[in-house]
Length: 108
Image (cartoon, rainbow, N blue to C red; front, side):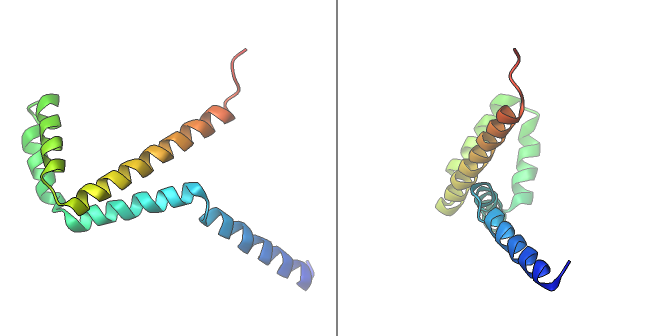
């Protein structure tokens, strides 16, 4: 490849990578990661895990009461981070199901 071809290919690669990094799916992933990081920095995850382990043997009813209580009795910032993270996760799952549905041919 000549020098000019290498420069053109490099600029095409930069533009392509930039578009991928700014895509909707990438923004959803960034949002999910940042909300998880916010939750980890604001919540004592080891204490939540220990409390969850103590409650888990009570079955689904105990787990649902624990999760509801944990969410309702936490700081507003944690609740917002949970809400944003849940929305990002749902958006990612919707994108994934759409891409699977599009890539899978329909049965005739």
